Image (cartoon, rainbow, N blue to C red; front, top):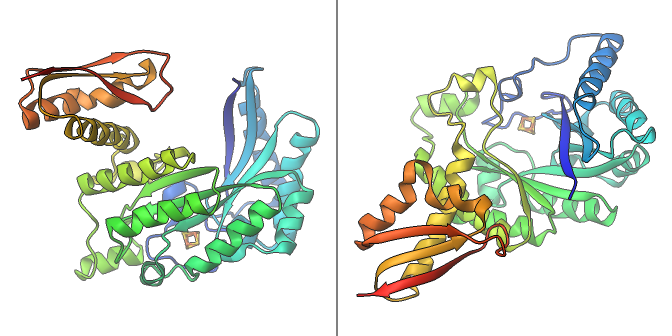
Length: 340
Ligand code: SF4
């Protein structure tokens, strides 16, 4: 199977007339808002794409990805200019497509016609949450129903639809987030990105926190919620493209930012699966789980944390995790137990 890479091009906060309480796009993407001329920017864009393409092997498919703002909200001449630049690489066959992220309420037939004309293949929506009370408290400026309508239109036009969600928004519970994941599956998403909340200085959320009107869930709770959502996505056949915020100089400086978040979510998912298998299989003295070799570290956990947890909780004499590559990625079975 061919490898896939995206060439990201960030358009921070461009096209967005909103102020979500958690948003500081320049800090999340690590890139300041646009100030340079079209000529300079065109050069920068082509340099970015060419530099990446020079390192890509022939067994790799490549897409140009416009991320960071609300692409379809960008002033139309500028949006078309960016698309034309990217489309020149699609037409020459050097990249296979263009993907972008945007807001649900910035999708309509007119905009999708433009995207279709310029070779866009995938549209990711910032779904964030499917509870209207959470969307209102987060000042998203759209409803869950706007998201349903936008997702349907994207799929009807033949684009690949991706749904991005954020964990820990104001008023959001773990149940809201599982429901959001279920809705993203239900809406027909092909892929997802799961972001844990990070309270950035200068955002409204930060001011709410200082005023003791909001406190983010503890990190371990965010890991737990991420694992529950990931389980919903995997069962629904939705590919997780990213779990956790992209590192940048700015967010790296936050004590609450943990670059290992995605890995910890995968570890927790396997821990939950192992607990389910143990508790549905009767009391045992030792236990052996089998997974694909690519998943061994996810099942064992960072610093053997999952193994240690199971030994401690169930007083096992031993917990072993072995590999069998006839199992698909993500599968786990309990292969042997010794009864007490
Ligand atoms: S829609 Fe996106 S870019 Fe706009 S304020 Fe909200 S999070 Fe930021």
